[in-house]
Length: 108
Image (cartoon, rainbow, N blue to C red; front, top):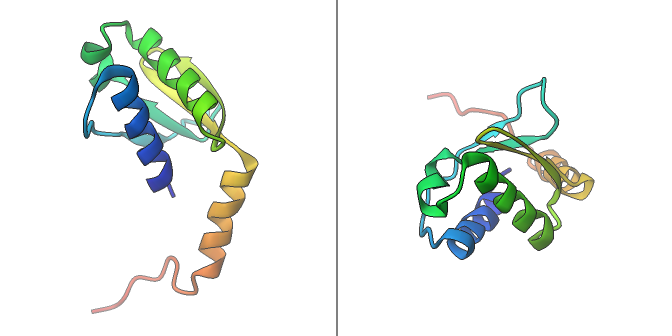
């Protein structure tokens, strides 16, 4: 699901901080916070030369401006919680429904 979003984040990190092939750690956002996926920004703090919060804010603003997939974001310390657009969520569900073998693991 996140391959396209990971590519956009990678391009954003390269543009903002000059990071090439930086690791992208996307996780499901914890239930007590708003958002669909969370980006851990601690690995980018040294390159950004900003606090974790400022780094997350810069990435979030750039993503929200640059791509339609990100509807909104919020920052909790060094974590960037991204809210995905309804269109992004719908296209993901459409892809899952179109794959007759989604979720099926072959038996050896």
